[in-house]
Length: 237
Image (cartoon, rainbow, N blue to C red; front, side, top):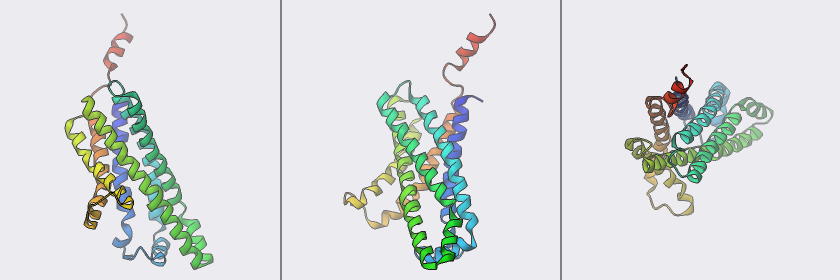
C-alpha cells in the first residue's frame, strides 16, 4: 500500500468517525432525554449514560489524528500544480479543524469531573454543564465544523482549478460551502429563512460524506507520482 493510499484510508476514516460523532451527539432524544436545553435533564442523561461522552471523546481524538494525516496528504497531492500560498493556507485550516476536534474531545472525556461537581451542589453542576456546552458544542465543535468545511471547500476549489481532483468531488464541495452561509447569520449578512436551519444541520454529515469521498479518491488513484520511477532507479542494474 502506497503512502497516498494510506493517507486515503486515514481521510476516509476521519469522515466516518465524524459521522459517528454526529450520531453520538444526537443520542439524548433517542434515549428519552428530549429537553436537552434544560441542564437538569442533560445532567440526568450524563449520569445515566456517561459512557457516551467518553465514546465521543475517544472518537474525536482518533479523528484528530486521521484529519492531520488527511490535511498533509491533500497538501502533497496538490502541491505540484497549486499556488503555494493558497495551498499552505488551506492546509493550515485543515490542521486548525483537527486542533479544535482535539480540544472538543479532551473536554468530552472530562464527564466524571462534571458529574462530581454536580454531586457537590446541583446548582454548581448545572452551571458547569452550561459552561461545557458553550465551550464544546457552541465553541470548539462549531469551530471544528467551520474549519473542516473551509478546508473541504479550499481543497475542492484548488482541485477543480488544477484538475487534480475529479469534477464530481469538487461539485460535492458545494455541500460544505452551504454550511459557511450559516456562519454569516449572526452578522446579519444572511437573508436565508429560519427554516434553512435544518439544511445547515444536514451539511454536518454532508461534509463527512465529502471527506469519505475524498479518501476513496485517494485510495483509488494508484501509486504516488514517481513511485514507479523510484523503483526503477533502485533496481539492480
